Length: 81
Image (tube, rainbow, N blue to C red; front, side):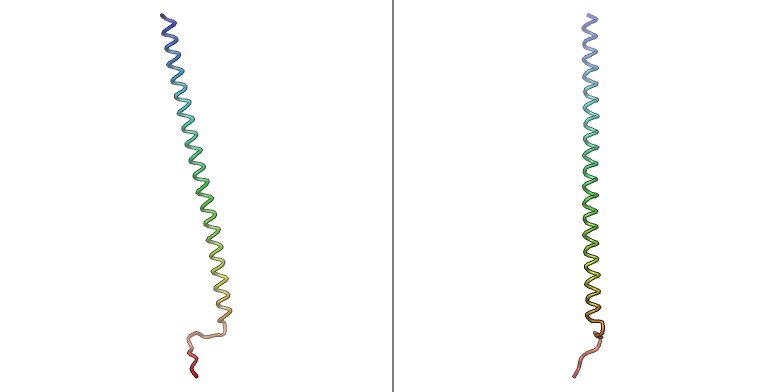
């Protein structure tokens, strides 16, 4: 009888240990998934920042081109004959 109780106790402890191990594994998987999502968002932010810098530089080049094109022209004057 004592052996049966001990066997039942061991089975109960084994189930408890397996449940704890599974729960810990799930937490670790969730943490890894979260880290992956964070890394993905950081990459997207860096790409967006690079694209924004490219557009800012293009705009600056266009402004310089426009200024040099009309450097000697006063746009407030009207060309009347």
